[in-house]
Image 1 (spheres, rainbow, N blue to C red):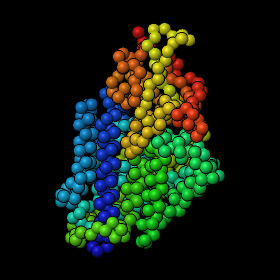
Image 2 (tube, rainbow, N blue to C red; image 1 turned 90 degrees about the vertical axis):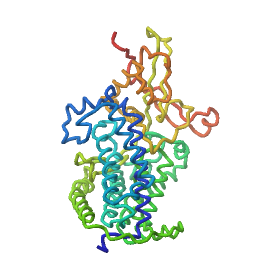
Image 3 (cartoon, rainbow, N blue to C red; image 1 turned 30 degrees about the vertical axis):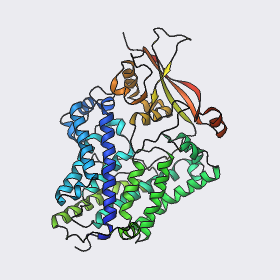
Image 4 (cartoon, rainbow, N blue to C red; image 1 turned 45 degrees about the vertical axis):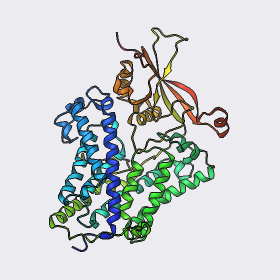
Length: 475
């Protein structure tokens, strides 16, 4: 069984597992704090209505068997507590089978949430967390050496994330091929961060260098993950650096952090321990046969399921962020196959006037992450995921993306729903709900250096049309 484990990756596994548990913690916290307004019993897309029409085989999970807001809250908070325990080292302090059970519980608990999350959970990083979490079940703990097969499966997952994103760009928007996409991307990305304005204002030749470096990092470097050491470690280091660049330039939930987590599967701990001055632990005993059998079974399963994502990578009609099974195992990934040239934002306003006219005063609702107030500097939220803010960005691209949740969202503003208002940064009607709500479309652009110094505004916005005419509750 000497081939089965490699103690040289003990520190890399430790970092990978603790960071992955931290991402689970963020995901469960986001679910616990946002679910009532989004998918709760009185939410915009209620789970009870969903499970009445979607059978268990298409969306397996505990909420197919029972749902209540209280039960969901307990489930999500229990997931957060379990994640925190694993971050603190609980999985290394228990027998191997117990550690595997802890990781399996995290995977099953989050799968139950994703499978009833509907549009709010339709992001590629949900499947990525589940696929990485499934592999973590078989990574073992401090009582056994890191299994080589699972480390290779993690590298294969990271390869699909990076290489798939690189291919979708080359096959997609022409600006990726002429190296001009970053003329626009930092300004039009879903949720800019505090440094996005500065990234956007970099000289255009540097933007072209950024795009060329991105192609190298996503189409060439991932091949090095399968090379012998130290090439694999160098490839992982390049991926980590490029992902940290993306972390600094915007808010992409936990997507970048998961790529960083997976990259540690290719980092040789022997070099890492020398750099950090950490003494390796004593060699663990040989892994039990039942554990080796489970790892081999998982490897065969992943290999078999890899047919569909591998075929998708080679297809001229490559699809992004698609799951081929309801367990979200061995998926296909990709991001930003096309880039918006202009940023349109949906601005939601309300009024307490009884009748409408030219003199009606409209007051704007403020969102936590998406641009609104032009003088408010974009904030950093990732790896936390603001689901409503992200879907508001999609709504600005096309009203079709606002179906079927935008109407229920407006209705809850008109009723002053507390759970919905907690998703917002600013409620202009703290004492009573508005009588009318409307939504307008604005063209946003980052200000220039001169405009920022003169006005203190990070954005300039121009009215571009009506998104939703004034509506009121039926009498």
